Image (cartoon, rainbow, N blue to C red; front, side, top):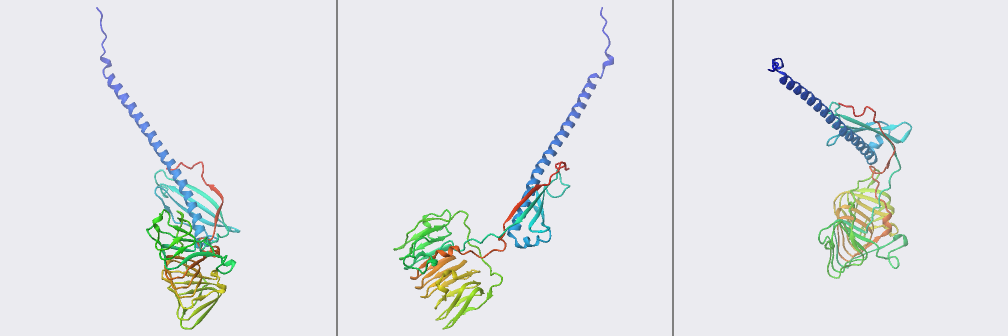
Amino acid sequence: MKILKSTTHEKGFVLLVVYMVAVFMCLFSIAFFARHQVAIQATERYQNRVLAFNAAEAGIDYALRELSTNATRRTATATTAYTSPTVTLAHHAFWYVASPVAGRSDLRRIDSTGCAPNCTNTSRAYQASNVVVYCRITSGTPPPSLFTYGVYAKDSLSMSGNAVFDSYNSNYGAYGGSNKNANGTVAVNSTGIGKLGLSGNAKINGNVLVGYGGESTVVSTSGNAKITGTRSNLTQDWTNPATVTVPTGATPVSLNVSGNNTLTLSAGTYSASSISISGNAKIVTSGEVTIYVSGAINISGNGILVTNNHPANLILYSTGSSNVSISGNGSFYGGIYAPNSAVTTSGNGDFFGAMISKTYTQTGNGSIHYDVAMNTIQGPADPNQTQIVRVKAWQEMSTLAWGTGS
């Protein structure tokens, strides 16, 4: 008979195995989650590292724009370092320092710091990046052409009566004969129905432009009115002419004359609160005259006599939104820049030159003769947009320790 051995001493073995497996699983789980947490933190640091670098580059772009468009900032950084406030973006931020370069008044050093998720270095997975750029401020950019079109209106334009729009070149002499053509353009930056309207016997011997995307319904003609040239659209990036301000050094003058009085203006730049010419009164200019007017412009009577009847010798700037009116039987020679004003011409006098308006209305029999020579006239210089800033050197100030933040 076989005798079985007792297994009493093996009691609890299974429980011990279960405990050991449980401990092993706990240790494995802890190690796994710790590794996973490290991976998450590493991913966060990497993401923030990329964001910080992008923010630093954004700071450089921001600084370059400031130096190119802000004359005050440009001048100040020529002698003293400027520290910008912190610019906060969605998930990162930046700030920069623009400093002068010893012995080089045309150079600036820009130190840009980008940080993510913000610029508090105790933030979770905080990362920072530094980019250093040396840039050179070069010669100023020339102002754009002032009168690209013969007549420009921001909102609406209408012509009636026997008015004719055509063009000539005052550099070749007086209007007429062979110095008369149809290569000028009338433009209105609108897409509304009938915003450019011709009636009666009005005629445009030239081209027409309407707002980007505008269709043929923008232009309306009635009676014998017609357009001889092409019809098209302004470009998508076209912007309306900006408001101008009176430049430093303009001579204040009163330009309200009436009766039989005559006012003479020598060549120069003037500023006036308004212009009013009535009766037999007139203003006579000598040489190139530029006038900035803050209020209404009403020219009638004998108007303004311009040197050699050359339109480029008289430029009127309306710095506000008051109306501009040219009437009577005398012809007007000059340029009118009134982007916020309603401009009207009436009577039998012709208009020689070019104009910019918010709305333009022509009545009577006076015609409009665009002087294409005025296309070479540059607008007033903007002190905040007269410099080009060119990058000369670019360096990312990263280290081997970059990315080891908390």
